[in-house]
Length: 484
Length: 95
Image (cartoon, rainbow over all chains, first blue to last red; front, side, top):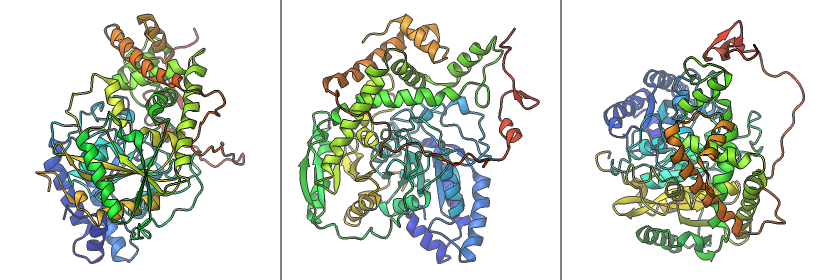
């Protein structure tokens, strides 16, 4: 049962082959048995899930089911859940029980989905390996000596190990696409503004966007349709109709114009990964697509620009954690400043502190123009490169990450080398475009992800393009040994 | 760009972060290397470029000035570390 996709499980529920309660129990048992090897969950919400499953079974019986009614999903522990702990992977929020649900959680609840738990993540979504979590590193099910990627590493690892058929994530600089690539599953980051950020703990507000982890593009389309939509409670939410993303999955892609940026095949790319990506693009040629080389001349500056914009916004967003209203508070503060400093010093881990300090420096008097304003201008140039490219092509393709999953501990003392694992994903966040990563093959015995980038609000197209690859290949059906 | 120990201490103070004395050299090294990476931006001329704050260049939405939220003070204060009579308690600020 656990190897099935969301679409197949929904069919089983409709046909009464199994109940949501049985289905939920199956996944909860798998989590209990297998997750100790992976550490992909921070909280398993067993009773909550079984209660939701019972409700879902009633709803299915009454003929009022949606495509996600009764389907077990996991939520990244960045989404506030009323009554269930939300930690954001931090000691700061180790004791935090949100007094409300995030809009994303509301939407899954309204659809009748079953939340089995909250997944592990890099602290405040800052990291590319899931090693910065206060709750311990997550392991990659393909090789438990390796990282799953980050920051949504728990969601990626759980879906890859078939502990849950779908999970949510958030992507600020690659935090859905990079772990999806490293764990051999399908990850989708929608256009900035497509999914509400309300109740999603903020890291860098002009970049953060929620999305999905699934086995297939079809399942991503189902989940995206459920979680998208305009929200008055998010000031950057975009008022635009939500399409039925499943309706166009089977559209013919003959004549599709694929742009391949030459900058994504530079000396930083592992040669075995490059071969897999080239083979995947050749597969698209066989399906009738036309491939053209394009250039994104400023994309090389995306990592430098990102490491000003994201830390600056994080230093501002994380100033709310002051030990006064919620979250960690130090013992016996001698005055207010001591309360702030020690609560924050004790509550945040090293990477979060680094980024807060970089952001504080970049925004401090005398440095604003040289850093933040400059980065916003470079951001415009990077974005313009994509606008120019989309005048000539329908989608852009390349590698998601320059390497396959690396060893736990390998890069944890070297922030720069860690940052460069997002070199092909960050530009997409700066521009605000939708992007996916789909399993495209193996290199060094580990999965490789193909990145598919679409134009603004063109999620239906990239899902269609991904689906066409998946009905002609079987990389997405491969499960890691021991978790089949 | 090389940050000294005193720079790190100043930034940590601005950010209201207590940092262990022994960790300061490590932060100085890491922050300096991040600023070196960021320095690559100076290779491109951006004189006439409009800064980009929002990917779709959206501006802040406004709404009518009407009360839409109900008072949930007690509920929100359930998770506070220290409250009394509806107030958040902090160390004495004014002597």
